[in-house]
Length: 194
Image (tube, rainbow, N blue to C red; front, side, top):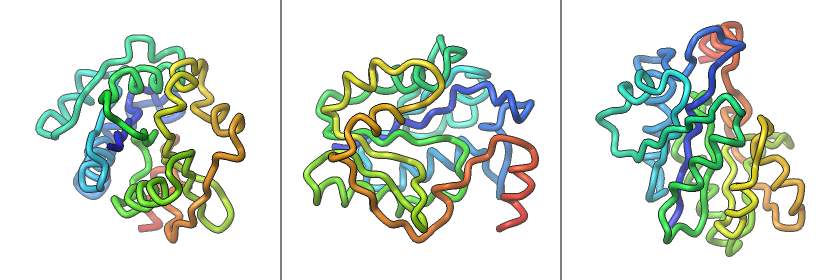
């Protein structure tokens, strides 16, 4: 059983407004992220909200997801990962940590990660595009305690770096795994690419 944790709690400081609610091709970024996860082979989707939680949750109120609120979101991404991991189903074999601001992701990316995970019997699966690592990343549930101990805003990078022998890189044919939207300029550049 694979759970997807979508991180949607950030303050979007560089954007200057809540980027999860920005509309791209008729859907908010958070709606797009939820749809990608829901249309994949993953069995559970968890959305971690925080900043502007009420509005973000309203945008996905009709989606089949578990919503958990990170009341300590100002502490950084580590706190959101902890919140999400704490809510994962007890029978989960692995978790995918997914950002809410990558509109180029498709369900196929998640499916590739899951299929590779099952073939390799666990570990950590990282998508790669032309030699560059991207997001999302799939972690075996055995890393649960390490993920629960994350702090600050570096995400799960430390867990990856701590287990290099457990990492499987899988080539993805889309540059969408490398593109996230942090600023208005990023958004304009991204929408210009489509």
